[in-house]
Image (tube, rainbow, N blue to C red; front, side):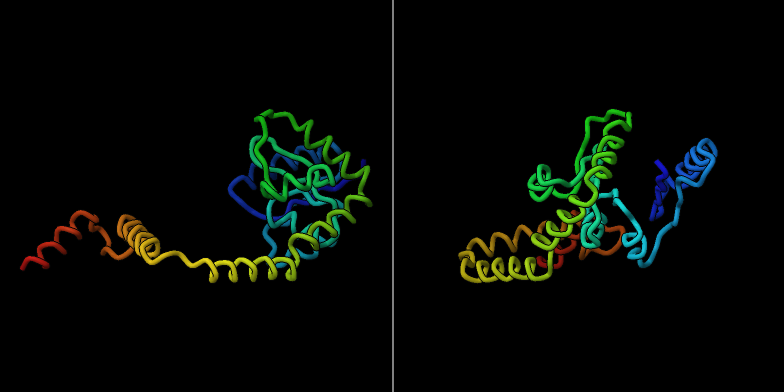
Length: 196
């Protein structure tokens, strides 16, 4: 298929990926893989795409542009967002962990499926992101959460225990300790000043 794969972003693996892309482009005799690098405003890339491949907020942006998406993750994971997979991604996040199979067969099959159902999946993606991630939806969820938090304030002893635990974590992480001092040394000096 006369497909062009545009990679938006940057990272440590870019040099290796560009070499692989150059080899593939030479083998195909055309510029099938293009690197844009990091874009401050990637909206033009989302608007131009027929299908978005990514994870997390990248696929959310793609869905907001009404694009079908294939969600990828670690260890070779990939799956298209469809009516059958949507509830799992909504619960677990727009990401996944695969079996570690080095073959790209799963991703290729997912891309073929996304191409085959492009119109239906584009509509589904846009409706999904509007229903679950729109400003109105998220604002209503946050408002309900805050109201519930105010209604169910913890007892005083629970709040005090939580404050003590938080303070211990901050001390352990040396947030208030001068550079190079250990928590043990700080506590010893504090005890000495208390007894002096």
